[in-house]
Image (cartoon, rainbow, N blue to C red; front, top):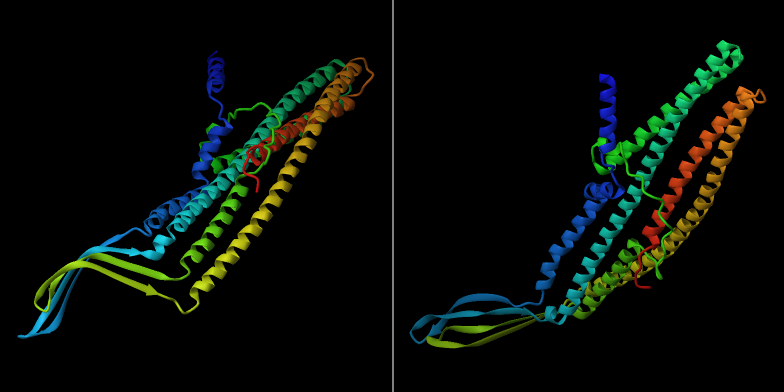
Length: 403
């Protein structure tokens, strides 16, 4: 009685355990994924650097003091000047719009790169989750098949003792049971491996993975007018950043123009002086560094444009392949559904024939194996179809500006 109560309590506790969903595991994975952490750090770096870029072209206050010996009527005297004002980089002021545009482009590129990392991690999680669900479903099916073969083996032994069946039927049932138990052991190992992979990706306790929520089969998503994914957005942001770099170098053209504006007070020739102070400086590089920078930036722009074209081509092929995979998976899933129904009919017919002496135990073994295999095929194709539709949704369900 106590054992029964403990078993009943265990069943109730397991039934009350909330199932772990794909969304919950994905949120955990996005926190621990190294690629996502790297992309987040890169974005934070660009945001921190943006403060410095925003300050370019703004006046910088200064104070200067100068004391220079000077000849006077009574001998050597000091020329003293105190100046308070601000230093302005005229070249930075003229190029401030370009600087801010380059800043925004770098942030947009880092943001898009983070979106790529998030998308890739979601794709990985979909694969790991579907693999774990498929492995669990196959294990449960194998376990049910072992129970069915155990019942058949017991029934064969009873019929053999009563003289209604030959000893060969008992041997065949025992052989089939042994094979089913071996398949169950393999399925259990596959399930553990899938759970371990999911646990390594999410860093959640293994107990949370024992009960995974089985989502309903998603519908085929409606593709956007200009379907794209995060990788296209990242490539577009890289092109814009390269264009802004070229425009910034052309705007400055290597010239460094600085202006110091302020008010000076002091003594000159022993007499007090006071008034505005303006100093302009112009530095013209003669080493050809600016021209080299411009050529490098232009080459980087061409490279980014070529990479964008490659990304667009790859994305179109990837989306087309995902759609074709979904189409073939849908047809295979429907065929598996029909195969399961037909295999179950065949098994019932063989069982009826065996009860009337028209079928052998070998035919029952074959029919039951056929049912098991068709069910496993159905499970595999179900999760293949679900995975294909989820991939299509991630790759083509969102819209972006047409290039």
